[in-house]
Structure formats: C-alpha cells, structure tokens
Image (cartoon, rainbow over all chains, first blue to last red; front, side):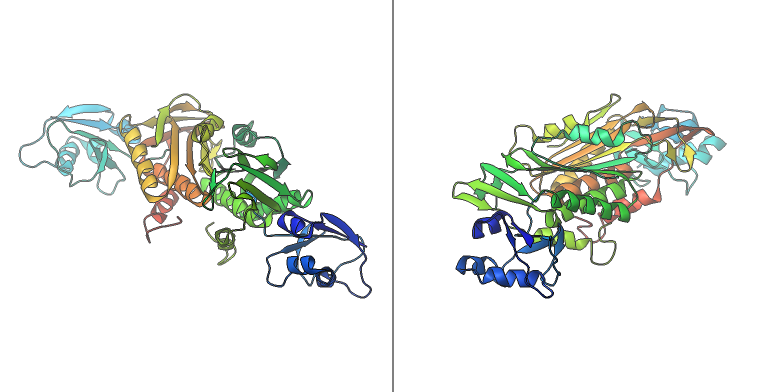
Length: 84
Length: 84
Length: 157
Length: 157
C-alpha cells in the first residue's frame, strides 16, 4: 500500500484529501499510480490530464512520473506552489 | 568670501574644520581655491596632492575642480565616503 | 544553522532580525524580506486569503532551500517564518532574514531564498474576491526569478 | 515620499518596517537592510567606531538617492535611518527599508540605495583598533557595487 495525498485545487477537483491504494506488482512508479487514477472516472482523468500543471512529491521530496514507488511511500499530488 | 569645510581624515591632516577665504577676482572655480590651499605650506600641499583621493562638494552637492564659485558658496573637502 | 517556522500566528519582524544579531559582534549585514497580503491581485479586489500547506514537506523544503543558500554564500544565519491559515490584506505572510559579514551575500541569499520559496515550497493561496473564491495561479515570472539563480552559475549572486 | 533620518540614537528595525505597512493594504513586499558594526574589519579587531558626517549635505544626499530609486522602480515608500557618533561592535549603523507591490522592485531598490549610500552619502568611519585609531578606507568593491546600477541601464534591477 501507498498513501496518496492531494492538496489545494487538485484536492478540490478530485474531492479527496487522502487515501490508501495498493501498489501493483512489478516495478511501480508514479506513472503507474497516475494511470490508475486516470482510469477511475471523468473527474479523475480530467484532473490528471496530460499537459495539465500538477506536481508530485514522493516521501516529501519533489518527484516525477519516473520516480519508483515501494510499499509505505507517501505520494502527494498538488498544483504549482503559490506561497510567499 | 566663501566658507571652506573639511571633514574626517582631511580635516585632521590640515588641522582645520572650517574657515572663510576671499574669492579671487575673475571667474574662480574649485581649482582656484585648491591652488591657493596648496600654496599655503607643506601640510596643505600634501593634503591636496594631485592623485590623492579627496572629494569636493559645493553648496552640499558633489562638485569637481571645474565647478565655478561665487561669493557665499559653501565648499567642503573630504575623503571618499565610508558610511553605511 | 537555519531556523524555519510555519505557523498560524503573526510574527514580529523586529524580533526575528534581533534574533540574528543579539549577542553577536560578527554580523555586518542583515537583509530581510517581508511579504504581505495585498488588497488587489491579478486585477481583482481581495478581501481574504487562506494559505494551505503540506505539513512536513513544507519544513523540509524550506530547510533545503536554506541549506542551498548557506552552501552558496558565506552566511552567518538564516530565518524563514511562513504563516498558514486565514489572512486578510495588510497581514504579513512570510519573512526571510539572512545575516552575513558583508551586504552583498546577505542580499543575494535573501532574494534567492524568496525566489526558491515561491516556486519550491508547498504552499497554496486561495483568495476571496467579489467573483468568489479562487486559487491563486502560479506565475511565470516567479519561475523566471528562480531560474536566474541556476543559469550561468552564480546568477545575480 | 522617502523618510530620511540621521541620528545618534539607536533605531528599532521592527518599528521602521511597521511604519511602511501600518494602515496600508497595498504593500506586497518590504525589503530591509540593516548594517552593523563588526568586531573585525580589514584584519584588525575593532573595539569602537565613530561615525562623522556632513550635516545638511547628508540628508540631501540620502533624499537624492531615495528620489533616484523612486524614479527607477515602482515603489510605495522608502526609509533610511543612519546613525552617527560613537558606536561599538554589534550596534546597528544603518537601516534601509523599501516597500512595493512586488518583491523584485523592493529588493532591487533596497540594494541600490545601500550601494549608493556607501559611495555618495557623506559619512566617514573612524575605528579604534589595537594599533590605535584609523579612518576606514573606501573600498573599490563599493565603487563596483554602485557602478553596476549605471552600466547597461537597468543593472540588476
């Protein structure tokens, strides 16, 4: 299992702040998870549409689609940051 | 007459903070005054030696050797500034 | 070295600056930045703002940015304080204060930390405007500001 | 617009920053610099410092520098406070604080004012060291810092 977190406009778009999902066997990456999310329904596929500006962090460090995942990882999805 | 002011290390070198001097007739400039000062004695000629770093302000604005002078002007001599 | 805080409460800029200098005689320069909520953003009146963040990652990201600054310039100390939660125009959002022996390094590091914070620390602003609530969009100008420090080695440093 | 003061008394950086923001809702950025007396300068221990200035011209020079900054960047307000008289290591010497809608302008203007103050405002420092009293020498690096703003138009702005 990995923990998925969603922040800000992305959280509102998918209407979910946190969930746990099973990791598929093999060598799962962020891309594997994103494919699973896109397959859920129109809202999720729209939120993760290619070209749309979203960011991902794995275990609280910036990551990308190729970042490998292992059980227990914390994967966070969010829009570009706007603090400061 | 013009008022001459001296600041910081230059003041210590000539051992004078303030004096009044007569303006020569004609079209006097800062250079005219500096020539007069250099002619006073070795201490003054050393303090105003060419190439030595000193600055001049006329009526509290930065000036140079060519700046013209008129009666009542305030002429200040000082080393490069070191505030802040 | 760096001191990083994320908090709902207001901060006192004078106290943060004092914390960098108190009891020290080797500090020649403190550069400080304070960012505040404006009543106008992207052409709309802003009556309120809420700052969301990613607890845990936020602190790590800010510490990492400070460490990068400390590796790049000869600094004595750094402080970053960032508020979260509800804010109104006029409220301070963020403070970055950097101490050094000389001013050039303090200025450069302070601006570097702000530019990186703006593009790499997980904070998100939601504004309340006459047209309703809206998430603030990331600015291309902020990406450009952060990019300056990467291209060509020393950037504006 | 600018507020300029030359004084023997200490100043409170927090209060100066607050003066730029109190009662306002249009300030997005305040960049502040504080310069302090270090216990080490040019390789010698400094136990004391005396700051001399040219009363009258000092204020004019500082106001002129602020006016140049205000003409060059879109600023909301500026403050310069410079101390004179006897100081010891750890004492604050100078504060420059600049407010603007956006951070880039506040940072640039604050650094510009400091660079110009360092080379154009009539202040002189005398230090007390183990080798006796000495006038601080002007630094070529300060001239270079001020020169950046002239060459090529916008300098680092």
